[in-house]
Image (cartoon, rainbow, N blue to C red; front, side):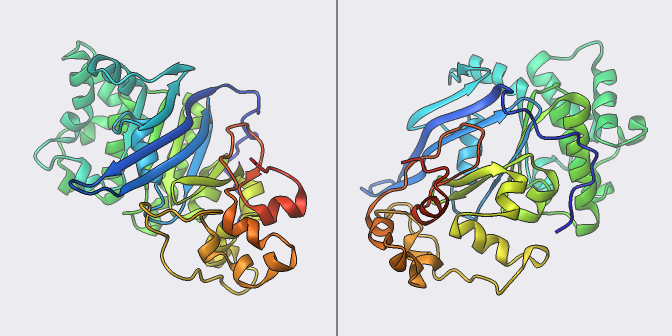
Length: 347
């Protein structure tokens, strides 16, 4: 695994305040005419601090996109709270409009994000017009946003249409559309998933430069731990609606403690130190979350008999490890890991 060479001076200090936070956040969905309730987000505490990039990683269906949408105010939590700069997020239209000037979404598919009938200028100016109307400095602000996103000289791109640009350029237009409002936080959902490998690094470098030059914070949602290694200050690993491991990128990705994190890392070519760990079965149905540790039915530590030998197998099957707190230290929701090192047990 290659150590980052982006020139970042160091991690965000642990005393830095949280700009965006979730506290015991829960989001449930009930099907029409059905009694079953899907617990998509099932108790999450998470902080994104000023000037920090947090990677939220996990398999498809683990709840990470629902969590991101709730942090953006696009989903209303069933319980718990989202706060921005220490204040609870309100869900009235006026409150959400003001909030979304400061917390912007970047989607994974620029083809779906950009209207093919709109020029680049109109695509970037749209947010300004929604929030501020047509302003005298609109052209200047659109040009500045395109320039920050790496499209220079910006005037050269004003009258282009999405189909006239490469995938990397289209993603830069989407990012410029977020930057034009001067947000403090970006929530990026799989920001390079639809791009060729040759341009992924350029977009990741762009996000890092925005953090360093503008003090921008970001929550990057991804299934790719390699991406997390190259961009994140901290990593939160999510499984079946819960964060099961959290810590600095070095702590989580060089010394993973949760069996789920170890399994995800084991299949990365650059992170492989032994045989890949193949998890059996699909993640459980979020309407039928198992008792005990929610990972126990797929856990390689339990399946191998290691948990039995350690005398904790019954705890794994029956005792919930609990919700990890948002304090900025490495934590893991695993009876076996906390029994071995005595660190980070939430319960």
